[in-house]
Amino acid sequence: MTQWATHFTLFVGIAGFREVPTVANDVLAIAGGIACAAGAAGACAAGISILRRPAPYLSAGHALVGRDAVDPLPDVLRLGLAGLTVLVRPGPHGELFIGPGAPQPGRTLRRLVLTPLFARASSRGGRLTRDQQVPFRLVVEFVGPSRDAETLLRAYRMLNRQLSDHAPLVSRCVAGRLISGAVTVAVAGVVDVRELLAAQRSRYAFADGTFDDIGSESAPPDLVPMISEPWSARFGWDGRESISAEERHLLHALVRAAHDDGRTVRILGPPSGSRRARRAIWTELRLAGVDVIADADQSGLVKHLRKLPPLRTGRGTAPAQRSPQDEREMNDA
Image 1: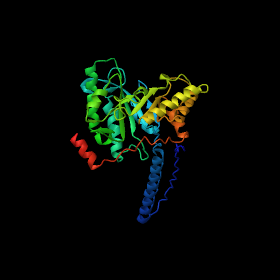
Image 2: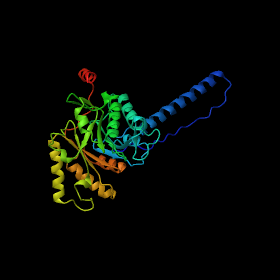
Image 3: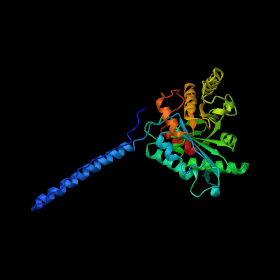
Image 4: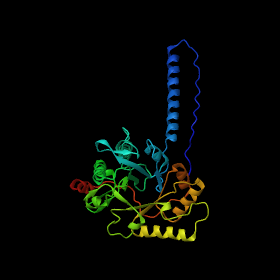
């Protein structure tokens, strides 16, 4: 795709005014200076507008952020990626803190991700970008040393309350009916919330799945809508040579089976390797119909996806506008 202009140069000529003895000429000179300044300001504003023009929304792009990422969301939105996996752990006051290390003051999921994400969607009529066609996929992955079931479930309930504050903007399931929003949230990691989610009449998050969930009655698509697996979980190809016919056939078969079961597929790219090898794997994933490609090499992934035609599978839907019926169901839930 065409890259936005990265430079805007403004040349402003300032003419010197000759001192004249009449007040009228002084007024004209001042008016001319103001007009010149106004024109310069207008041109400058136009330049800023060009610089800030948003990147195209890449429905297939998903960011994996490092464990030391301080504020991951701004770069993800600036690049036009349509998803983010963020590592969280329970902390003081019932908050979820970003990163696997000890909780740091202010580095909460609510402050750094949820609040700015939903504020952006709210200010833009329920979409993050004008060209958003599928929900932004936010994967909240619970990490950390704690394996206490009660602590983890309490943390999930906190997440559920925070999401319910933005219910009109979140993809949700109300009384068995799926309603698409600007953001779809999936829960992954050490906490298993499937039973808790299934028991909720209204839920604002979903469980992250694997290919083993295909056809499972205990993990229907309205509970586990997305399958997420690392590339290395089932495949040994590293992208340096040509992929084998067997692995290519397996990849296409798994993706087709997931789609036939009503689920989207997210594959996490290899944790290491050259960008050239990564590009080879990304290309194979797109050719197989993988809906979402997740990688830590955000800029490389963006550049590559912009060169590829968009994937048209019909499984992603644009964020829905609220209807009076939706409002009544949420209020009754």
